Amino acid sequence: MSEQRATRFLRGIGAHASVEPDEIVAGAYILSIAGAEQSHVDLAHPEHVFYAYLRRMANVVDLIAPHGEPIRALHLGAGALTLARYIESTRPGSPQTAVELERELLDFVLEQLPLPPSTDLYAHLGDARWELPAVSARGPFDVIVLDIFYGPDAPQHIAHRDFYAEASALLSPHGAVLVNIGDDPPLTLVRSQLTAMRSVFDHVAALAEPDMFTGRFPGNVVAMGVQGSWPDGWTSALPAAGPHPTQLRCGVELDRLAG
Image (tube, rainbow, N blue to C red):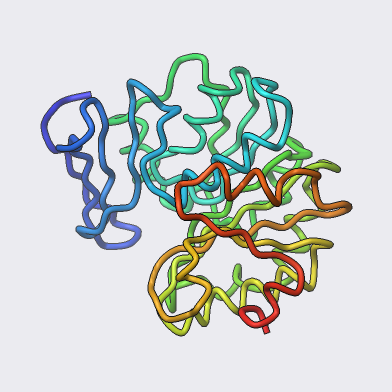
């Protein structure tokens, strides 16, 4: 990877993407699209996850299976493949699949921030909503990560219960769907997605900074959906894993936010 800033125009969305060295973390890089930071990758230490919401997602991945055991992961929205790199680093040999709508973005990321040669990643181009049947043979998945939502720009054909029902059908018995939801007050998108997920999954929980649950601040909420029993120990382990402060809410604790 060059130490210089690299850019590429993404014709599909009509915006420039850039990858440049992080001035704070040596050996790390930041992917930006249209001038907005999207992803952070530490190539030398992919087990280090810089963004708080991604760290919370990584903490759930850590609990999906025993330490170091390979898992099957599906990433809907590839970004810079930060979590895919994390899973390969902490669970070597994990079969992973990534669905990305923008071919040019995926090519640019893999060119500028190459994956470790050992990574078992199948990249599939297409819309996450319609490509689930095409990647189903790679499952069932222990974790499905959805990271394409932000506020009013959330794609409506994905942001509803039918999508979550189809994703749930691809989970292994102990699997989880993880959804990063970025939103602004009054958290309309967060509320609608939690409601949609609660209509599909047996258990839905949310991880965020405590202030996010007041609905008065912008930020990210990580929503989790699981079928069957809520995993023993997650309620205490996830807030304890940080980054601090982190609060987990589930069941009736989500009623006010989910409606």
